[in-house]
Amino acid sequence: MQEITNNRTNPLIDPTLHVWHYEVPAYLFLGGVVAGVMILTGLCALWRPNEQKSRGFSLIPWASPILLSVGMFFLWLDLEDPWNAWRFYMVLKPTSPMSWGSWILLAIYPASILLALTGTPREMREKWIARLPLRKQIEGLASWADNRIPLLAVLNVTFGALLGIYTGVLLGTMAARPLWNSAILGPLFLVSGLSTGAAFMLLYKLAESERQVLSRVDMGLIVVELLVIGIWMIELASGGAASREALALFFGGPYTAAFWTLVIALGLVTPFVGELIEIRHKVVPGRVLAVLVLVGGFALRWIVVYAGQHAGWVSDIALR
Amino acid sequence: MANERYGMVVDTRTCVGCNACVIGCMTENDVPAGHTRDWVFSETTGMFPNLQMTVRSERCNHCEDAPCVSVCPTGASHIGPGETVQVNPKRCSGCKVCIAACPYDARYIDPNSGAVDKCTFCMHRIENGVPTTSCQDICPTGSIVFGDLNDPNSEISRLLASREHYTLSPDAGTRPKHFFLK
Image (cartoon, rainbow over all chains, first blue to last red; front, side, top):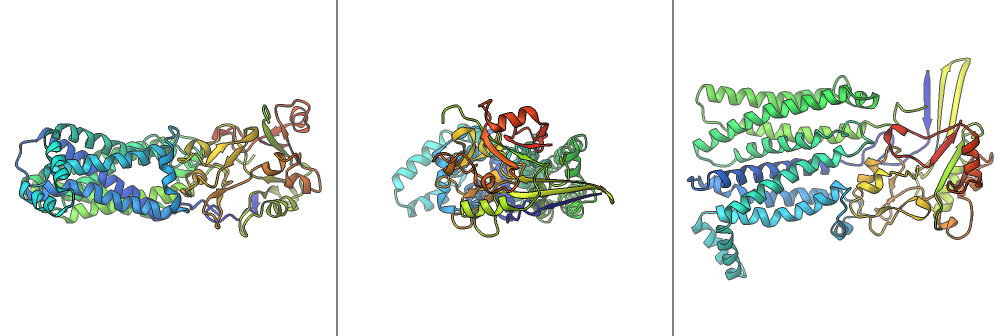
């Protein structure tokens, strides 16, 4: 028999850690979508610069700064002292992924907005700029960007990848939380971001050929994501007692049903099978499967954030 | 305070779990209601009548390799005087990453300021010449000893040299400066 009593009563910590709520998974999800959109649109601008794109496709890059702003708003809501948020930009601490993440977020705005400007149809862009103050300067900036599309594309791919990876590394560096404490979380969030990014792009009004390419890209990414989740689980299963206890949250523990139904079945396997059927029967990919991928991507962030806080060192083990 | 390296020991043989340290700390540091900087942990193992009980007073471990300090994005959590782990509330935005990074769950958010807070080893007393922490002062069994680990003649160094001791979750790799005597 083992009986433990502890009279610590700190809110947010006892009985189990629960410092992060809906705001953090919401940011991680939106950050992932932005990372995916930046990488995919960047690669498209780099590899297919002269291809005729649909109007819907050419407007997609604008989603990056908009969704990122929504995500950063959620992050800001999570702060206990939100008016101290400017303190993030007073230092750059190499040991803190949150610190370099906050600087990456700043770099994303100019890179994504300039790429979005270059892709926007000319007559539309001129109409927009005509309504803005500092018209001449913005026009100058836009034509400067027009001549540097490869550079901007590379910057979008780079910062998109950094954004996708850092959100996972942020959780992965915490030795105190065994479920998160894995280097694979960075790649997992990156590939999930790419997959949700492709799904998000499928929500736009696109040409048939564009839908087909995106749908196939998404299928490949789903397979990679399933493999990465498998590797993550093998790592946890072959780790120490704390890691195995953390993995048990998905195998019989309180997150079992949510993880296997929302993330694996609904968010990954169903869209994959659906996309396969679409290809077989030459159906133009629609939006339903894309929505499922987005739901799965959100559920993954939600469950990883919540379950990760559930798993700790001091809770049941390491008591000597 | 040039070469000091402060630490603490708690004698688990003499600690009776009376909670005086918890109340003393709350009073000394004006800890907000419902929050604790130190706490009493007790573990009972065995089958009646063959039972064994461990009681210990716990708090921030003031780790040498403190994860809360390395993950802090604003530099609010830092290594302070005597190699203790301290928080500068003016710099803290309340992102809570340090709370998540601490394997000992020693940190909390001060509801009044929104900044993170925790045990300071009563640095306001030590820096003003009071040689003891408030939990040590109030402990009726003398189980808590604070002192300089770099001074071989300090009481804490002599206790650690002569008694078997352990730290919490050493596998977390944080090298705590808070020890428990067996």
